[in-house]
Image 1 (cartoon, rainbow, N blue to C red):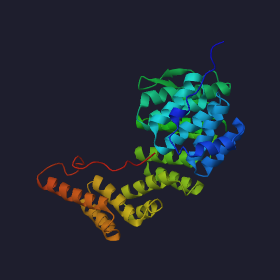
Image 2: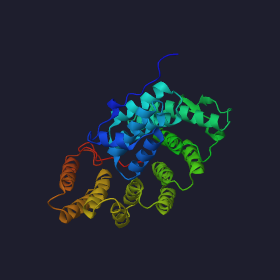
Image 3: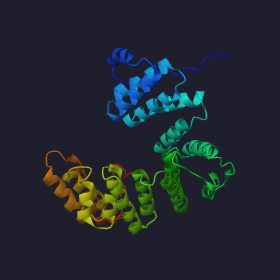
Length: 331
């Protein structure tokens, strides 16, 4: 027999080293460490959670679930390189680990590496279909020429990986294949009917497809499921601003930030659409509400003036090349 596979743990830790001695005293078994890691994660103590999961691996080197959680924590912190290292460590030892495939696929998607994301997400779906005994779903050729799952014959249950099917819907949206994306979102809703993540993704899909009334109904349904989910409020505010329902858009953006930021966000959407007079009103409102602390509104107001000059010089009145984009709306 060859040597026992070992996961490299020290290289994927980036936290408070003062916790190490305390953690080693606390956890005497891998199961206990996993439980304590989960409790710390739920409490928002990512350093303690990270060390507990590392402790679980020290006690049980093949506890791959712990390394997946380490990767998730790093992803949450924005440490994509360390997250990828953790997920790849798992896949090197267990190539068909469904959670690591899903997490690495979604990491690729977040980094806009669409082909790599699709490959791993398809593998995760294939494993889920195998678990369900649905062996007839083979890969065929999609309209884009890339391998595609026969989505109409996919099966799911409550144990299927929700985020995988949702992520495949996002990928289809990015290819402007809205019927395919909706099919994936429908599968995701069978897994978790009240998922606000899926409602947000489906609503954004309708928005991109130009089905704005359906997008609004979907966002409102998601708010009914969980009114604390910030990405949905941001996308709902975008939709309302595009519909020129500015006061409602302000109210939506205020769910995730202060009034000054909400005014700036609505103004920015108007700016992108070339509605310079309306944009200026919202930027000035943002400055009045927070004159000393809202540099972004001043910058955007300067962009309004810049675009006005471009128009006066006979340039493209709807050009946004004169200014860099702000943070993109999220799906």
